[in-house]
Image 1 (spheres, rainbow, N blue to C red):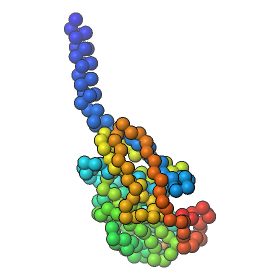
Image 2 (image 1 turned 180 degrees about the vertical axis):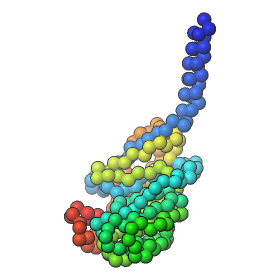
Image 3 (image 1 turned 60 degrees about the vertical axis):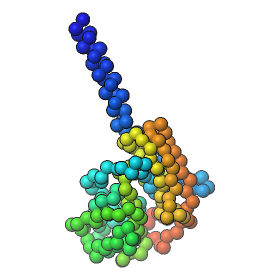
Image 4 (image 1 turned 135 degrees about the horizontal axis):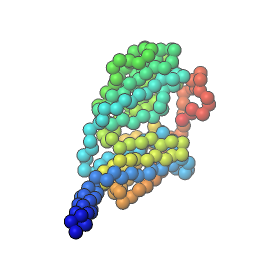
Length: 220
Ligand SMILES: [Cu+2]
């Protein structure tokens, strides 16, 4: 009898553990982004803001915005407030990276290789990157007060993973978003909801000029 009884109590303990820890089970949500004509939107940042206002602090992780073939790579990055970003130059020409954006003003005067000190993005908002030498170089860093974010691919899809169960406001931002002051927002409850979709009102694509190495599909 004894082994049987201990097995039963183990089962009870296991069930209790499962029930009690259910709120800690990580949820995920699939997001699709389309424009007003229904076409998939790439380079859209999706991020989840917990309704409680409580998000864990930024983890120390290596974030890079490279310069390669006289372009920034990636075109759109997203980091949590407080994150440090390196700007390695992989070209054999020098770059002079800068931002005049209120969320982060900085300058990396003409350099080759990787500057020793990263730039810390300490305020939420949009940071537009440029290069003083190469006018066509442009990229964006969106700084968000949450660790739960993703960027859409060419299919307009992105997945937010490892969110604790609860209520979130999900926002969608893109460099061409017409209303930059307030990105569209949707309230979701996880894990009850597993997908959502946004339709963005975007400005037309414009770019100053091609880089010498542009393959032709880089217009945004
Ligand atoms: Cu440059």
